[in-house]
Length: 86
Image (cartoon, rainbow, N blue to C red):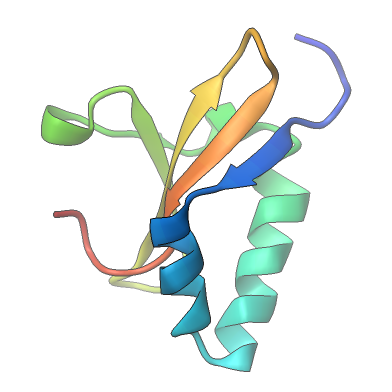
């Protein structure tokens, strides 16, 4: 693994989630994305079941940021940014 940060791709669904966040949570999400997920996406929690292969990091107590990782392309895909797992 290189020291270069992963790039981000935010899905339309995640963009809709982000649009509903208040400014304080948007700032917190930005910090999580820039300082944690792009630096070491494997630091999150591995998910099981229907979301096997995805990872998550907590935005709030009930709202996770759900993402997948493409190691070959060095891209993290943000799938959800709000709403408990479905």
